[in-house]
Length: 545
Image (cartoon, rainbow, N blue to C red; front, side, top):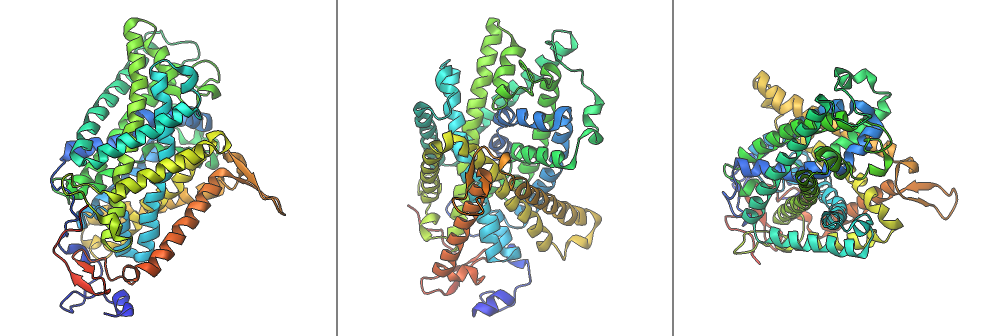
């Protein structure tokens, strides 16, 4: 099989031409992961935990309110639309091809190897990698806040916070290494407690507002909060949507665990859709309640107070639950939930990343060592450990750059890659189903319109993101060129550009080192290549550690 022939007209092992998209119909070759390990409830819990509702609300709500004002509940609903459409695109693609490489695999098969490698594969890796330092830092801070060590907990760059954050990454890596069943059970417990406590917070706040026990500055819920014409400008709307994109992100972990799920073509995608709906309800109720109780003022517990923007929940918890014995316990539990929520999302960031690189190696897009699976735990070994080690190194370095503010810029830069890999999945879905989607109105909507709109909306957010962060004032850190024209560049754009350059460099290196993948010869589900670069059908599992 020549390179040109492989790209223009793929053929099966018997020489029969393969119709575009039909390679998805071949039986999945096991990668060594443990099948039938998690069901619908567990998978949905993992999707919820990956989004980390408590952490997302604590770290993002204050900034959303400053930008969008009382229209924050409206933004929750509007941001749900591209996320729901994207989750449906993932569901449809997972139904066709339950490969743990998800966006990488789907984009590579539908749109080409380079698109799959960079947009799907590197996009997923970069988004996860850039977020890990923030998760570790917040988890380290909240552990000290939980035990009353406020001086340490409020200092993001404290050596004790750094060591604790590293400890969290090591612990969570060990849990992920021990296999999906251990990880999934932990996620179920944590996310159930988290959602219950957030519900208690919301109900308590609404009762106090309704009974006249809310503090000065509280607001009465109004339908005008859902009036889109009250948003001051399109730019303000897009800034708010970018923040909400990060708040909703994470549900797609469910499809990354497809090869370890019951009914891998159905349950992972369904769990992702269910997760986004539960997130909509959770975010909407909590934001409505705390905005009513605290108001959007810039003093005290007001959501617009700049002193509370990095963490609104710990302040609100103490105010809403009160100073009684039960109230203090509830407030501590809320801090604990933000801590465990952060740890949970860090853990569920390791899981999909390890499976993406496992799949990339399995399909000969990365070195073979990344495809190793533990013979007992049935989890990726090299993929899990390498990602975690790199996360620790990045966290340590960024902790000492610009007082740790680069970590915040890294999280913002991560939204570039979230929009990239989720958006490319939507386009891959449209292309894969381009011939079958017109068989009925339902398939046109679910396999064409919804996935296509998700891609368009997410790429629009990506473009606006790039435009926004060309303004250095939008970043926490800046850097001035030491030579004419002495431009000042924001930290977010620097991190994003460096990440793109590193990704392209790795892709070009792999194109030289693993050319068969980039010739389109290794992406059939049941095909692999030998050491002498010959395409063969395989029936065996990948190497184990």
